[in-house]
Image (cartoon, rainbow, N blue to C red):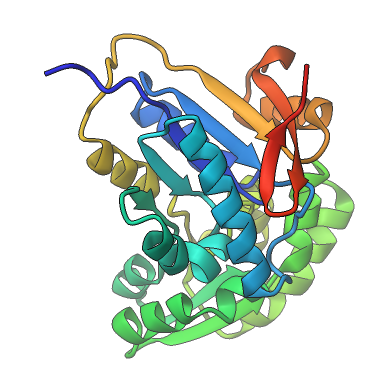
Length: 276
């Protein structure tokens, strides 16, 4: 059977989805990826869900013009607001979305209390309520909305004194509740794991769903690429390409050639790639 060489499409409001991208690169080294950072609209968390649906649908159309074989919505806010919507709007497209990792946390807790760090759009979405109802009825779920975490990661401020101060404020009420599992409910948050872990201490497990999402993408793809070759990643941003190039390289721990980062702009609800 002929190999399917089409790329994976992966989207986020900004660089948070790179936490998923690095897992996909590790688990699926032969896959080509188109990564879209909607940095002109970041953060998605405080936005109205109708806005997020429009943005997500526009990025999906942009991907389909480039013949992707699957779309990974590597953004908890976009998954919460738009996953059901784009699945209905694009029934022939395979989607992989984000779901707060409440289930594994609820299964592993010994304290019968778990914490969830999230954004407003995810916390207020139907998906979050459904996941808690399905998997965490018998445990205490302490939720903390952490909007400034997204801003800090987008600024590349991963380990500054201010980042530690903000994290202390967010984590204090959650830790006071006696949780022993801490769910990262936004793809930006794994980049703050060292800070979060230092504050939470050894008795609190950090639950990062990135590896599980990459495994789900692998299942959907079904091994339809040649893993003997190293795949290529092309980045698109509705923000500043040079800034994304530098920050993506830092987050991935590798040098990203400037030619692999392209600028786009929104025209109404559609995207146009800028000339290089």
